[in-house]
Image 1 (tube, helix red, strand yellow):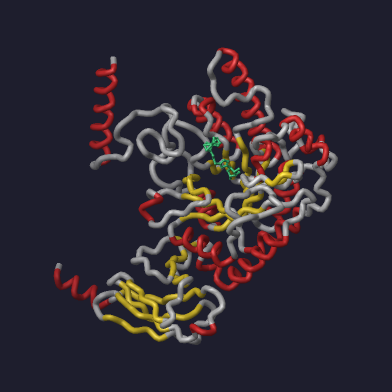
Image 2 (tube, rainbow, N blue to C red):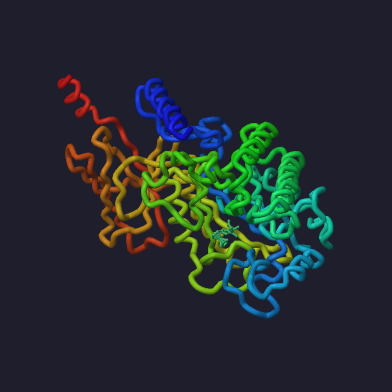
Length: 477
Ligand code: H79
């Protein structure tokens, strides 16, 4: 039987080679629930997501109340994981819903702040691992309508952000510590029976969310690492098809499901599942090869690893330039960057986050065109920072984070192009001096204001086709 399967596999591989005229990537294992496609989605909804480039993450839930301290004791691990911390009474934690009353929550203020920061979308936690729902779910009592606050937070967020022109993506944890039928492993018949109940609950909740908020652009799934969920390839695949049918263009990342062989993220053939790579959590690729030709997104915290509100950010806390550096790197490698905010229990955004949002926003106001709608420019990377190219206008940018003390910036363009002008964004009247090394596609740009520099700058480049090179090539052929 195994030999027969192997033979069929080989036959399929051969057919793939014949049809494509070259070896297809999906070559080894025939999978029923593997990658949906090879390469990027090309539809409008996905183009919009890609062009958005920069998003805001919001982690808001019961964990904002303890804010990293349980009964006076400091917990260094991620604040939103408090329910799972050693020494935390889970029944007591679950009763926090009785105290959840973010009276100062002003979703319009959140949305305005995100917009002014330069974000084009928001990812909001509808339900984190602790199972508490920020929307009035019919399928569990553990939801916002039973808190003293009562009002639907997801509805407010969707309306407020969309009114500011931002897209909304719903974070949803499959893992649910509160639900009585959740199991991390399916060891007994009873586990399997209970997990069927849980699967139906999950399906109901996801459909409920899309019914209540049909304008959202996608789901951001998390908590999918448990063995019980990895067993659900068929169920998860079919459920995603149902969800996609409810909201055409719906975007689902690679963390949602496992394939026929329980592989997550990338299927057994090494092909990305879902619409974009979700593996870049608090982590960035360093070169274009790392992203394997797929869309991807990095989600990042301001402190080391806190998503929900933690009142005591110990250790290294990133400043706005470190964050902008990551944002620029993401754009330069064809990915999106999403910065996390963890509102306080009263619903307000902490002062440290507000300061960072304002600083990023001030920079983005001047330089945002090098980030939004912009992606990878295939020129040799230099130590001063990142190149991007605007997909709409084809304008090319140098985002300079590490200005050399000499003020001299090396550019290795392609030989096919001449760089005719270089100037600081918004300052096209003041051209920067350009030195050219002939026939190498190599230039040196002189920036003569180094001592006055206060923040990273963006230099815009105007290029033209190198006609001389064309002539040479034409005579050759
Ligand atoms: O919501 C934020 C985090 O709370 C959540 N994702 C971001 C966006 C997150 N939770 N966990 N992780 C990220 C990392 C995963 C840790 C794990 Fe494990 C290590 C999962 C499996 C191995 C710890 C040990 C949890 C289960 C076993």
